[in-house]
Image 1 (cartoon, helix red, strand yellow):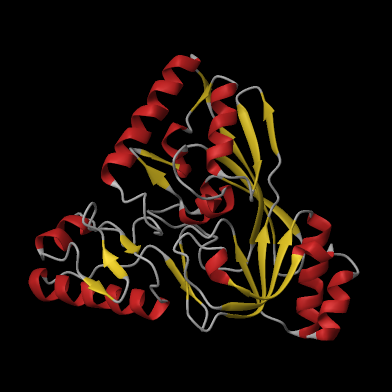
Image 2: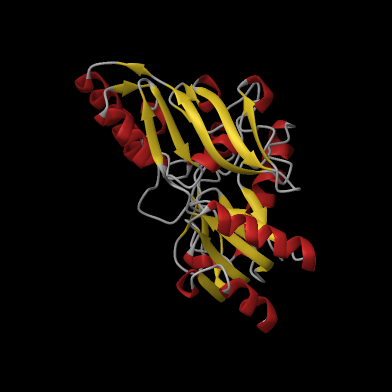
Length: 299
């Protein structure tokens, strides 16, 4: 680890390298054991350098954004966790190009300030562009598949490629990036001109809906489960009488049955046990298998 640290210092500022860093500091659930190395990446050349080192030394790499759709297990993550801070935002007429580390709230605000509509649905999603593309994030009738023009990424051989909308293979909460090791660098989004007042009203309307229906006063990772094709998962969980059910400090939200909240000292083990219990109860009552939407990583 000492040798690796010395190598990292050749290209990465010391202040951006953390050793044995608790992942609970970097996830919205406030849960997660230590990462061997946690590194904030602020430039493409830094990313290339680390990927080169990881390949030469056969070191595991984990990429995260804002940690909002993530559950890290209690023993943490081996190797290097890279948090992408590539967050530049550019505008060309009705097209926004955003770095993968740009927060959705900031990109949405930039769109509004430039009278560009199409991102209102994403204004309250607490993630990054990279995560949103990977998961085809959506809310209130909108999804990223509806506005993506192209995405630029770096592959396993350090080649930089760009794909169009169709090549993303967007599906419900999924894309080509979900199950491979390509790293998103930036995305171009096609928006349209609209009066700022109309955009603002829509964003405020979505914000009110979110505040009234979601447990925003507790650490959470958004919707834990995917919607079914013929059912709304949160409704089934509610009908099973599971609102308020807990294992340790992990609770099914009283406000929205699709959310599991951390009421203080919940562990990843608590969360995972509760997730599995919910799956079991729903299956026993309705004979349907529900799937998790959040990503569970680590040891």
